[in-house]
Image 1 (cartoon, rainbow, N blue to C red):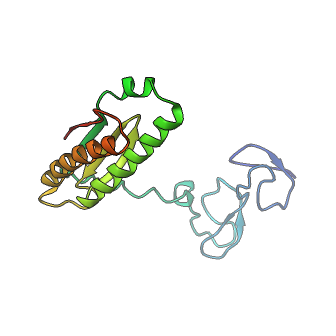
Image 2 (cartoon, helix red, strand yellow):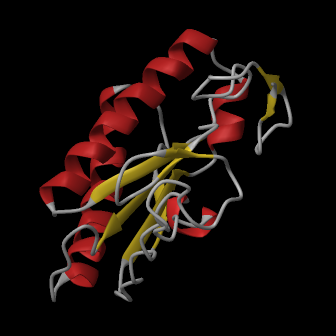
Length: 171
């Protein structure tokens, strides 16, 4: 006698406990006596106890999603003023080196004021304050970081002998 899998419909030889195609149990064990019963039966053929339904053997429901927490964050965007024009007249390696130095400088300045650089986009830096830990003075820290970053980029321009290298920022 062959047994059809209740999950995938595959035929299985008699005596199998699990489907050869999908691994679904082919017999439902009685919770009281452990006797094997065929899927779809409501009561145990050995002891008469009610068998678990498909709903009770389903995997447990997923835990509820974590509640969203509303918090204030401050975001700082800063980029190099006139970067497109600046990069057009320079060697690609020189531009890459300049950007690397600028990004490292931005990471240091933002970190010094307790912010976190989220990403670099082209020549722009996006930094945040208030996540994962919020402080009452996050907005002030972002403004101070922006002012220091503007000064630091200007100094980087002088050091690299790039006249007019400046950062613009919005917070």
